Length: 295
Image 1: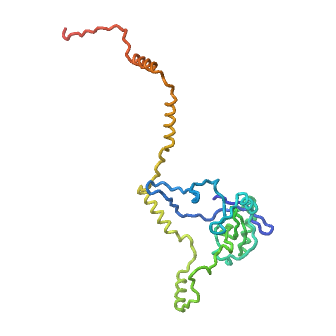
Image 2 (image 1 turned 45 degrees about the vertical axis):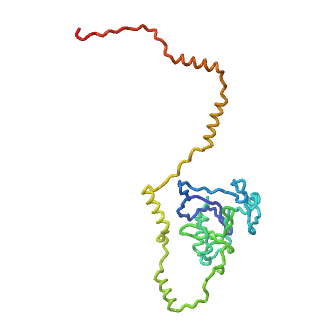
Image 3 (image 1 turned 135 degrees about the horizontal axis):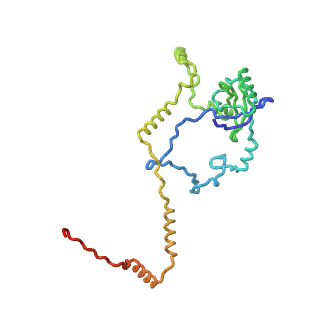
């Protein structure tokens, strides 16, 4: 498991070196967008619609749109200064509360916490204190230049940290349209609904729940692979600029060859023809006679 953050937890005078590990992973099946004709993955270019030209990384700056079409530009030095001022490698527990006091709508992402070097005893102390008290810690932490609220609690035999949303990040339920109010429900309907809930009530066993769509999609993909329905990207064609370059070089060589005198050319051709003729043999010819059969 990859360590994604190192720091320490502090509560009171206790300081615990810890490491963070992502507790969850995205298991969605990633599908690439391909060109229908040749099945090559499509590339997306960064292009300025105003200048109508492609832009590189050095041409980009950060900006905040405070009204439609108007931006405040923030340069790298300003952002780096803010980052340095708020980059703190510590998790400070500022309060202890009961877990049931926090509505799940606030929960964001979970991280396993492991002890750092020489932190095992203090780690175990906090874990046991949380178990015995039945409380969780409310803390603040900065991860990748972003400050988070978080809770520290015990999960199985480990400490786990869960980042939670700040109150202004949770939208008001009053903004949800069409929520019914003061609807009259008769006792028979209510009792029937409660009876159904009681019949379906069980112990939570997460292992029995699966992503049926993802499973079916993976089975379809595997079936296509087994039926040899896979495709391969067409190899890149030779670049025309390379061919043109070679042609230009060859033409340049031919053009820069020294011009020969016509008389010298005729002389060279005559010499070449003479050299091609086979030389006369100086070896004396020997005459062979055939012996008649039966003599």
